[in-house]
Length: 176
Ligand code: SAM
Image 1 (cartoon, helix red, strand yellow):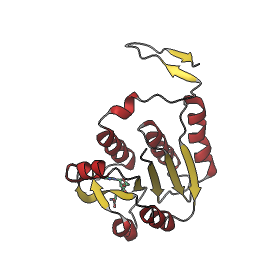
Image 2 (image 1 turned 30 degrees about the horizontal axis):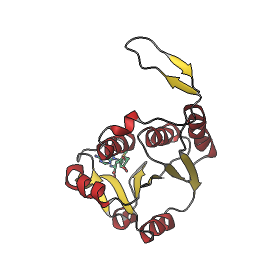
Image 3 (image 1 turned 90 degrees about the horizontal axis):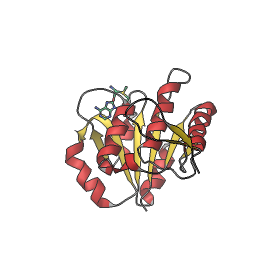
């Protein structure tokens, strides 16, 4: 089974707490297996882990200080590195070859201007349109296009809570 991991660069302490947490939650909900958070507070890991323990699945959060080695090792093991950036080539031009490669994916995104190595070390610099927007949106669109929408139907094993979809109001049950 192919692994999909996300590498979050450029986290600015306190200022980016909420956005970095959202990147983690989107990674989990849209089908990634793990996120690596560079120079990030343990409280962010704690928040995302808390969601996983309540809502299920095996999503992992790794705090790290060094990302270049992670990228190099990923490539040495045969995985692909995908950098999401508005300067890249359009998603439509690369999504088929990324999907068909069947390689593990490491998806890089940044809180601020990405360092030049992110562009150089990556196999694909992929733009979700060439306008500036958000790493949260870019990750969601990339994963949704990659999985063709199927990720939204996933079952998260071991959840304590489960939502019963309903047209109005809220229905929540204890799972299991
Ligand atoms: N102007 C900045 C730059 O140099 O890319 C935008 C930074 S943006 C606030 C933070 C992150 O969102 C970027 O590093 C990139 O990962 C992601 N992002 C923003 N717009 C994007 C787009 N159109 N396509 C892909 N990723 C995008």
